[in-house]
Length: 454
Image (cartoon, rainbow, N blue to C red; front, side, top):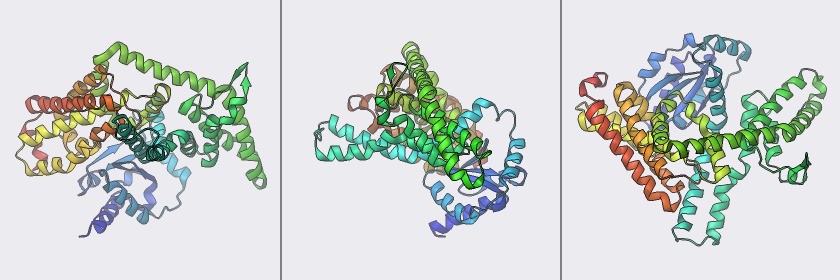
């Protein structure tokens, strides 16, 4: 069977177990997961989906998250799109059914908020990774003396890599407005309101506005607000005048509120997040690093880790470095060490194959295949992987390692760490590998635990 045909068959099987195209309200994908919102969850055969060849695992949150792994998820999603044909559904009925199915546990305001934030940033991850790597590698070449900072190739690479971070607010605004039921173009305008250089000439209450003040927090406020205003105005405007009046009124109101309220409030919140996190790391030191590193993998299991993206970006904007990302990156490293320990101890060929297939992705910073395919099903190794991650996180916190951009963790994160700290990051990575291996080898795994891998 050809590779393309393999993904087509898998997409068809997934769609069949989801209840067919008419039972798919919405879907999207991130680096490892196909995220599907079914119209009627009772029509979904979740156990059958888990058993499909090519499916690593299934997470049941506000959406069904089918773990397929990096690379494969893009190909399966492409085939899935052809099969579903984006059929028009009764969205009101679908939304009502979905709402009644979400349990109270999963519908807590904080969890729902983080999921919506994640939905805004997940589509931006490929762009963030690409821009971050190009920027990081360019800086490493300059700091290592390979290229002069004023050379044309450095200027060219810097322009290619830094463009996203200059105009990121526009893309965040587009996605935020779409997520909250507004027009994406108006959301983009909300982002422009925050970053527009022209506002530097405006003085309110005796102080000039600062372009970018409020950061992505301010952009989120403005974009969500413009979506709400747009929907509200549309209720009272005749259809024939909607295209003229609705966007104009929405932009005007949002612009005024943004400059008087959202920018200063967003700036206050951004400063609070940055200063609070830095205070935790400065006061807590290695203890804070251990706790943050050890608790990151459970966040990945729920898919809520993407909600931390604006925190990383605010740290980069405020202090020019992100000390949180290297600590959290140890989550994947602890898991890699645990996987090596299981591989060394087990005699089960199926488990060895699962580990062998997932390890390359894990080493490169994509942890879901190992989580859902190996450590989480086994139980205790997941906990020992967390302990190994905590040890690595403590090391990164002790030496104040930070990144100059945001990207995928694992080995590839080396290029985002300043040249002078690269060796420290690698040592921390190896420590997390070793700790995850030791905890799992001695305390976390016995071969009889892997009976399901027969």
